[in-house]
Length: 280
Image (cartoon, rainbow, N blue to C red; front, side, top):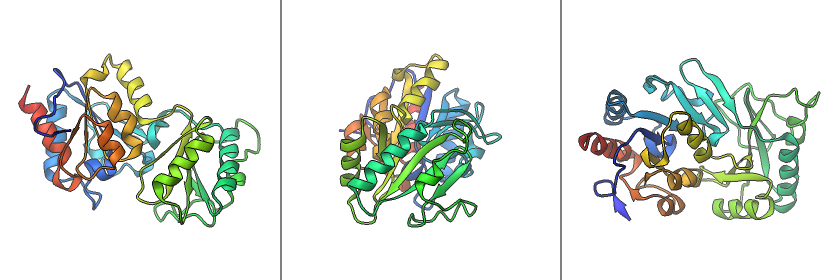
């Protein structure tokens, strides 16, 4: 595995795709001055920067001032593309409600004690046993079956993802279990240090939505440099022409990336961006 200073870079870098938590952001959820300067310099050099995250669009305030020309971000693990200039969702790739209900039922049977949250395009709602979201005080609290039910079929807000939390299972073991029993019906991943699964529509991922956004711009995978740290970044790291796992990354992200950079608290993304710009 090569490092931030010797891993091959694309002959021409046209787009930088970076995860946020554990990658671009420091552990205190801020951007360092060095990283802020590197992002601005990349944009000034004509390189597009895409934030590609598991976060919903409403949690993007920490980086929205640093989106320059296009203003777009890929949110909810690829289930939404948002315009950070005004907070609108430009497109969604939702999880079918009937599929979501079937997955909930399957996980309840296979992993007693699991609790769920439902991330809609309009906000998050969760079950009484689910760890509460202090950032969303207006959330509805009810069982997942009720949260996923529509008064009139087809009239509810798009389901971007369902989250499943288990208080006892090991995170990777929970992910493996879910993929084994329901991976033919939905996409399962994780980005939390706890046993918290993120469930999206089948085939929805950061990589798939990033590839679509790049295709619209005439940008190939070989012209993309990607950064990430957790299992929800694996497909993106594998897809990009050059990719870097953070020094603090999960082993699956390290295995998928073409190189490893410094940790998020050591400005690992900025180190590589500076190298890209120096080589132009």
